[in-house]
Length: 496
Image 1: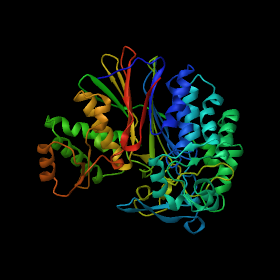
Image 2: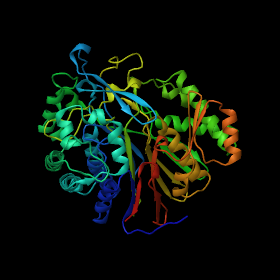
Image 3: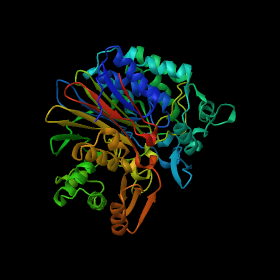
Image 4: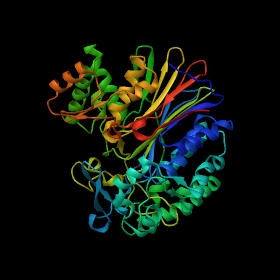
C-alpha cells in the first residue's frame, strides 16, 4: 500500500474545488474539523444539487483526544402541518437516461434544515479557525465561478425540471435559457453574499436573522416552515454503533439513521457463514434487506432492541467529505439537500431541501409525516480504528446503495487488506427486494454463482455512479496518509 507523509493532512471529496477548500485550511494550520467545515460550505457552490445551507447531514467526529461522536444535523419535519390544499407540492420527472423517477418539489416539500446549525455545532466543539475564515473558499468560488464538471453537468440534466421550475432558479442554473453544461462557469454571487453574512454574523443569521426571514418568506404562503421550526431545531450528538472486524473497531451512524444500522446488520448476517466469496456477501445483503422490510420503521429490531422511528426515511441526493489531519483528528461527513425544492430562497442563491417530497418519508401516502421529528436517512459516515491506531474515514452518496457501498469498501480494506484505492475500485453489488445489481467485472466463478443464486439480476458493463461514491481517507499511526476519491462520482483525494 502506498502512503504519503503529508505535512498537514489529507482529504477526499466529491469535487476538486470542495477538496481544495479543505486543503487550503489544512495548509494554514486548521484541523480536520475546520477543513471539513470549509469543504462543506464550498460543496454548496461546487455541488449544488447535493449540498445546500437548506439541507442537512451527519458528521462522525474522531478527535485526536476525545471520544467518537456522531453529529446528527439532518432535517426535521415541521412542528405544524398545514392543510394539504394550502401547500405547494408538485411532481416532476427526473430523467436518468435509462429510467425516469418522480420527485416532488415546491414550498410544501421543505423540511426544517439543519446544515447551518450542524456546522456551527461541530465548529464550537472541535474547530479552532474562525468561521469567518472557513467560509472564504466558498465565497471566492461562488464569486469567481466554478467550472461545471462532466458529473455535475449530468446531474443538472437529470434534475433539469427542478433547476428550471421557477424564474429565479433558471437565472442561477440556466442563464440565457441554456442549462449549464460541462466546461461552463457556474457563478452564484447571491450565495457568496449569504456565506459572507454567515461568517460575520454566525448561526443567528440562519435562525433568527435575515437568512431565516428569507427562508420563511419563501415558504410562508404555501409551505409548512415557521420561525419556531428554525429556532427550536437542535443538533443531536449520538453514540455511534460499534462493530468489529479483525483488528479494527468500526463506528457507524446510529438510529434514527438507517444506514449504519443496516451496515451493522449486514456484517452480522455474514459472520456465521465465514465465507469470503461474493455470493456470501450477496446473501447477507439480501437477508438483511428482507428482514428490514418486514419492519422498516424499527431499526433497532435489526440489532436486537426495539427502537421505532417516529418519522420516515429520506434517501436521495448525497455527497461525502472525509478529512484526517497530522494530529490524528478525523472527520467523516455526508450531507444532502434531496434535489432541492425548485425555489431559490430570495436573494440567497440556494434552494431549501425537498425531503418531505420523498415517497419513503410518507409510506402511507404523502403529507402523513409526524410533526417535529428527525427524519431517518441512509447516510452512513463511518470511522474505523485499528488496534495499532490506524484510522480510516469513509462514506458515500448513492441513495439506497449507500449501505452496500460503504459495507463493501470496509470489507475490502479492513478484512481483505486491499489498499483504499483498490477497495474503492473493486466491483460492487446491491440486492434490494430480491433483485441483484452488480458491476460485471467479478471473476467468472463469482459471476456465475451470483447469477445462479439471483435469477432476477442485472449486470452492469462498467463501474457506475448507481453504486455510490465512496470517498475515503486513511491515517496510519505513524502519520502517513492514503485514500481514494471514488471515480464513479469524480471523487478527489489530496494529501496536503
